[in-house]
Length: 322
Image 1 (cartoon, rainbow, N blue to C red):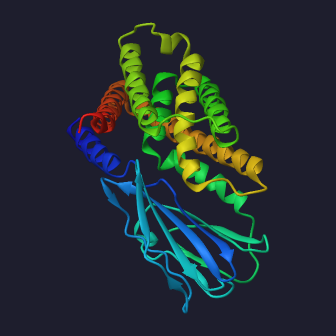
Image 2: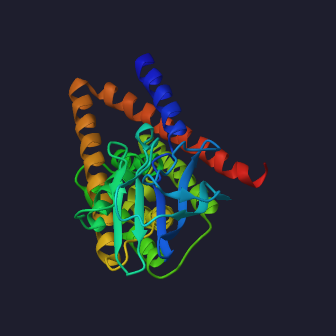
Image 3: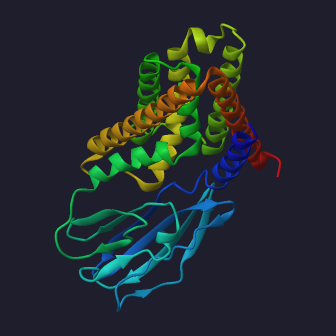
């Protein structure tokens, strides 16, 4: 029991610390005159500090003094770069020290574009030679958004604890269908909600789910137990706006918007299924050790989920009175 509580506390501290760092960064360089590019560089803010990532352009390029804008949890820099950006490489030093991916897009006057998803393991975009379609990168972004997006991850783990068995796969799919609808409405239809209320509602929904799990443990027939599909679908609509916020920061590749959106949602579904599979496997293994092991682990995990989510609720409400 003490070991489980220690692990739980360490997990809570790490989850709270890195809850938002996995949001992607975004750099777009648009050629407005020959060899003259307007650049916008957006990066997420973590614990009130922006990440130490500085775009580096090929040798010989000159850069104007950046103008900074802060919106919510994102800092945007706007500046001008003078050079043709047809050779050499564009890199993001510092990205390798983060959990953040960066979508980079260079658009030329002739209508051509060079795009890529840069990852911490390889933060360099070659500006010459062949390139692959960026749409496929959204599959991995979707997977990452579940596996490293702690708020959505905790909700999926909570679903496995609340529902369990084969039914959880269908409930998770209902969650995916719901957030797909709001994500599509936001990304393609221009529907939007303020990010801070959405983030508060997402955290509150995880607290609600934890309460439902606790009530189930006491043998109560709550709405979550009787109508898990309805709960998952309703909360999925809210989480969809959270997914949309992540995509809004990086945008969708022009000409392949629908494919990118489909791959992003497919990645989310694959990520969910992987997490649920691991959770069910762990619960089955604990059951083999004895019912008390499983019951204790479920109880500690549920309280951990509730505690983390409440910290998020308080942090996100803080913006309204601080």
